[in-house]
Length: 313
Ligand SMILES: [Zn+2]
Image (cartoon, rainbow, N blue to C red; front, side, top):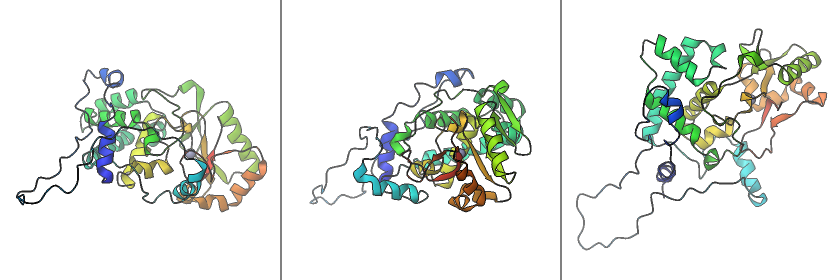
């Protein structure tokens, strides 16, 4: 069976619109037709040789959805190789259908526009309802398209374990918001942290490591995580498994509730690669003895090694 057929089967076999009411009900819009593409019928040959019998039975296009569990020890080497080569294509990876991939591009353009209107800082923490109301009021492109909202909701409702992300779902409502009174903007970073444990840990490790270590990503609300995941899915050419090996799907990121990323000042994008583990900043971080990394090199979440991601909760 071709990989794409399988993906379509999985999507079609999943109810995706049942929970659309809350978020989109507010907009007085009914959920549109499921974004899931119907399985494509095999092309009919224009001429059929009369004497040729069918050579194979057609494969089912709609396999049962089996929720996968983290791999057994016997699969350990294959599993570890997958998270080490996280940005490669692996057997069994789940892809968006071509129709959805086009819709993903358009949806990303809408979210880019929202980010432009709202500003990068606040975009980290804004909730969906507020984002939509800003776009609807100020965007010259018109209201936020409902088919884009449907795709966002569909991705949110989809069981991430089915494409290989095994972390728990932490935020169960797409419309959840970040409580403003509990957060604080960290000067010169453009990012926010929760008051309490997150901010205390950040200040302590900066005191102990020095000012060459800095916050590179703090609180990420549902809008921000959705935008990042969709951008990663675009970069991964619609391969959701590959995207989720380097970015938690919306609802599954601990950035929503307290974790944060740190990097070395001036190290740029390399802060989000395994090179960060070679910096003095990381070594000093490790020597402190009180800092835990969320995604270790042998983590069971299905995620790459992230030495920059500090576990708080
Ligand atoms: Zn992180």
